[in-house]
Image 1 (cartoon, rainbow, N blue to C red):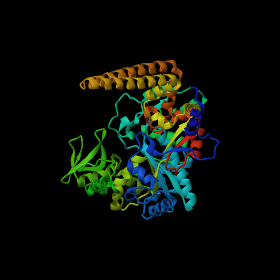
Image 2 (image 1 turned 135 degrees about the horizontal axis):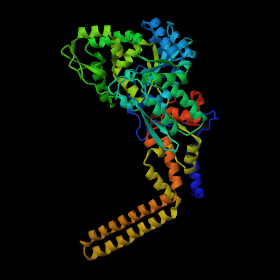
Image 3 (image 1 turned 45 degrees about the vertical axis):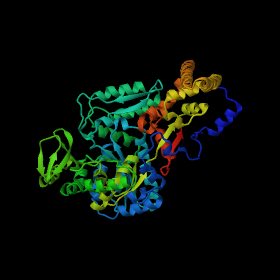
Image 4 (image 1 turned 135 degrees about the vertical axis):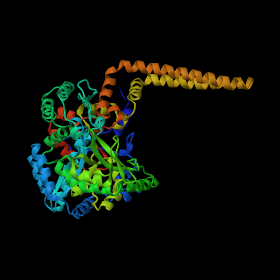
Length: 563
């Protein structure tokens, strides 16, 4: 498209410049409020230090807040020796000696943890999983340097989660420049079972073969997929494969699988109180939810009275516990039991019990000396509802640090955006509308001709309307309707012309679709849709170290990083 001098000046002024890797300046950023579907207002207010969000959290996430949270984390006794031994054993089983050494440091009574976590998503999950892990590693190093005492980064794998549909698939950029969904479909449907109880079967080998064919060829692809195949193979559980892959990429990150029998025993006291007291977390969350709504925010978790925030594995599935008049019911079964019987069951078999969404952070922070939790918008919103439960259970509440958010822009996408004067925000909308705009900008003479025709119809038929109105006022409406029909036909002709122009520039349209698929697939942020292994396959394992250096864990904006 040839631009006039004025258009070129406007383009240079408004276009987004993407940082090359060599630049020392911070990454280009986007305000979260600019997204088509921005995070909730509670998260935005907390991020910006605005509104009434502060009252639902214990401090913010500045340096002084982290220091205060580290001090709070040391205020209660924890089973540190047993915790450190169990975690070190997990890391050693994964062949992660550096993480095992870090796990043992949790036995030091002055040590604290920076924690993050995620469900055990297939092949490691989307980019945001990697950003969370890197955020925890970087923040732990910074906090350790400032306090002069051990700070251990911990990644909590949500292996008790039983939503198979949420973890069975990932999207990857394919060889054709589009996006392909890679979906695990085992021979036996494991729906309802926790991730630790889903053993990978031989179909994972077929799926990995398909992934290799989907991703662009090259040595870097083969290196990362060889690593993935060593983790995802028949036999290990879905959560174990996830943990092994993450451990292989970040050697110093302590990966915690809560399904461990020793850890389950250490978590049991919090679950016991939840059962004995008839779910104080539910009652307190209902009160907190009402306060959130009164302040103009929303409840992240819809709380159902009559349910405990405790699950059990029974009859091959993870099931909720309901309570009525002191009698517990294992939902989906005929089993009924008293509170005393449930406590006895917990003491006998702690491995079949797990915490629900409102109790899990409490279990985590009773077990770990958590100074900070690195989480996304939904997780921070959870915390706004469970804040009162921390005080009730006597557990120190950690500082909540928004996870780093980023979009990775490769050279081809950067060139496409800059050549067309587009921003990332432009890619959130309907690509067909953008293609239409492009087509018409490429041929301004057509838009100009239609504009003249539109003005002529308006002018001439307005004159007809006035003339007829002077003769017979009832004809004015008929003239106006005729003008509307003429303008409608003109717009239809313009649509046909636009379609014809788009067909003439198919290569340009294809480039836009490829660019959008990689940066805003289906209009969603890249970090939430595209698998991080696909980017490692394109850029190499060194991308992990590059992102460790370039991600800003203190940013209050969404970062845009050129590769």
